[in-house]
Length: 89
Image 1 (cartoon, rainbow, N blue to C red):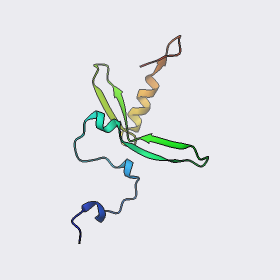
Image 2: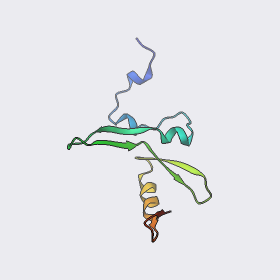
Image 3: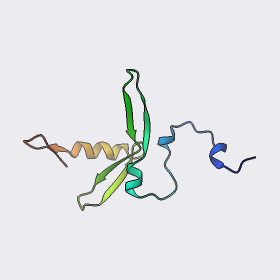
Image 4: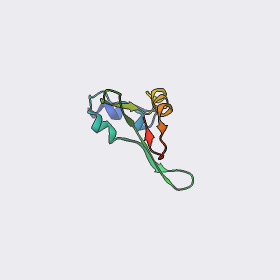
């Protein structure tokens, strides 16, 4: 019998939906991809596991695409576009 806990767990979620228990830097979280597969039209779809946002104080924070979905939506609603079409947060 193998001593690998991962093989003993039967997951019903996508691997990218699982939140690691190990502490990770924001930069490392930003590199993770939850979904990387073609959709029904054949277009390749990539969904990041974490969305990195910058707080008003300049601190960067990684929001998990499932656990923090409401906060991600709130952040997107706060975005504005200036006269030149640039997004302003």
